[in-house]
Image 1 (cartoon, one colour):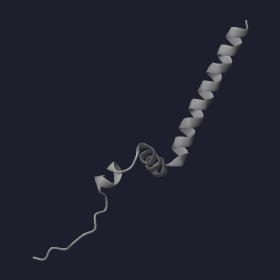
Image 2 (tube, rainbow, N blue to C red; image 1 turned 180 degrees about the vertical axis):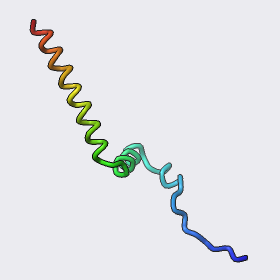
Image 3 (cartoon, rainbow, N blue to C red; image 1 turned 120 degrees about the vertical axis):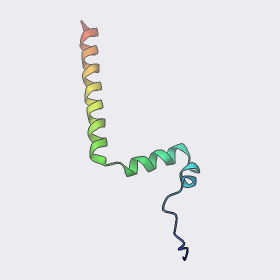
Image 4 (cartoon, rainbow, N blue to C red; image 1 turned 135 degrees about the vertical axis):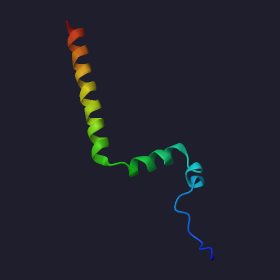
Amino acid sequence: MAIIPQKILFGWSDIEELGDLERLVSVLESMPHEKLVSALEKIVLETEMIILFVQCYLSN
C-alpha cells in the first residue's frame, strides 16, 4: 500500500505564533458581518438609552 503525502490544511502552530491582535483580526474576518454589526448596534442603542435616562434623572 502506498502512502500518499498530503498538505496540512490547518495547524495549531500557525495560530500559536500569532499575537493577540492578529488572532482577534483572524476571528473577526471569519465571522459573518451581519450578525456582528447587528449585535454591536443593539449594544450601542441600549447604552444610549441608559445614558439618556441617567441624564434626565440627574437633571431633576
